[in-house]
Image (cartoon, rainbow, N blue to C red; front, side, top):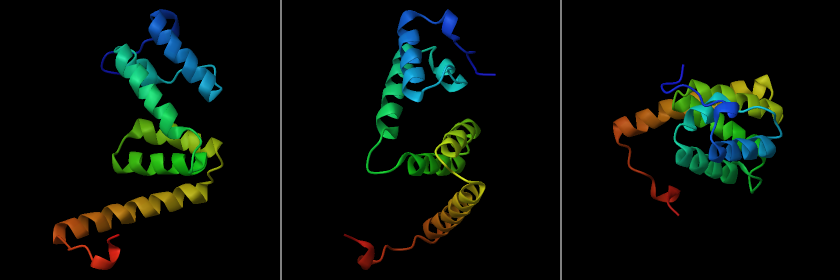
Length: 131
């Protein structure tokens, strides 16, 4: 259960409902997930976070599936079970297959391992890698 509980739509103040309505319209859904309901205890944080997510995840140089795969990868590294579940569902909706998920997890695992090794050994960056 969320630390402060969840703010359901029918109990939300008008400013929270406005954000909820925008989330549902943008995502083409008829429900609000628990992440947003938890943030709704602080409407300014809810609004700011939603605006940032909406901007970052909007169409751009990266396609929606790539953005979701990146989100899953970072969420796995940060060990956020909620975000792994949420963005895995979004990635599947955008076309991710089981094989793609497995490959992303393999890359995440390898990157985390080699990052720790390079950091632990304090490996100097090769000049050829620098711009």
